[in-house]
Image 1 (tube, rainbow, N blue to C red):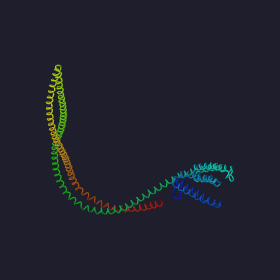
Image 2: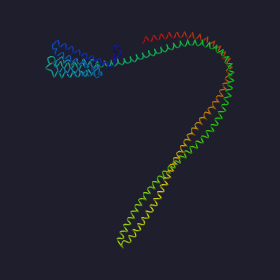
Image 3: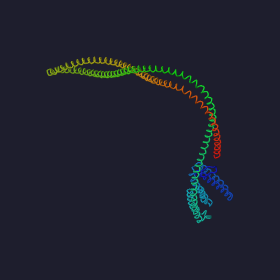
Image 4: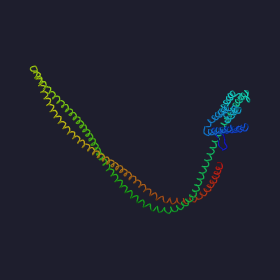
Length: 500
């Protein structure tokens, strides 16, 4: 950091940004003065004015870049831009004046005090002077010899070494100053924080002093009020003693009533416990009933499913019987055809006709049996349908009973909860009445002690009145000490304000 004229410290980036602005300003002044000299000496204002306008535009762009780009990037950008600008001038006007600008750029780079841009600019200037001397030797040979060019390059290299050494030394000094600035800033902040804390402490001290002053005034008023109150207490002490006997009689009466209340609470607790046992038993029975209802409902559901499956199977049997009837009918038809064919065959088909007749008889019997089985299956289906309907009705009744059982269980639970609550409250009442009885007995004992303490209280009040006189004297001493504190606080406050 560097100390600036505004009283603060500049950072490294702020220093670079300011140096870049100075370099651009120097470039503009150089271009302006060169334009004036060329215009006066060569009397060629037609070329000078465009050159000056172009230079002003370039400098304006560079000023904008200095404000917007990071300082380190802008430092290298200026080195490159100035080198390109000089190269363009040399390519456009290969004269000694432009040729010397490569030497001038080294001094421009030296403004940063950094060996890196100095080394870069030195290398660019040396290379460009050699290259352009070889390119435009005929045009600048009159004013520049090969020896002058070589010596100029040597000067550039020597200047780079010297300027780089100075830049390194400046950098070390800059770092030292920066560290010193940081330390100074830290010390300044610590001192400022200390003054702030001292000022805050003084403000608190002043506030406390004001409160002390108020307390002194209030204490004096309180001492006067205590003195008056002491006299009043002495007068009321006798009245309290007279009222103590009345309180004692009332406490004895209250103790008797509390004893009666405790007996009734114990009786209520016993009844509540008996009621709670009955409720618990009823709740258990209802729970068993609800469980049995659920089991019965599940059993009937299983039976209903079994009947449904049986109905399905009987339907399958009916389908099978239908198929058997169809087969019997076809068998009859086949046996009839066989008989006809046997008749046509004559003697050769008699045995076959007998077999066909037996087959027809067997088919008729099968059809008859199928009809009988079908009737039985239909009867079974009808009975199963009736059973299914009755089971459904029974399930509905069981479900309704289960709901009633659940409702009864909820009611018993509520009764059980209320009974437990009554039982708890009965126990609490019994315990509270016992505590109240003990409390009243203690109060009865305390009332007797109060009567005895009244005499001692009267004597203590007289001592308090005497102490109040001493308190007034102490308040006067406190007031004097308070005035000393106020004076010291004002002196410290003024000293803190002067050091800020």
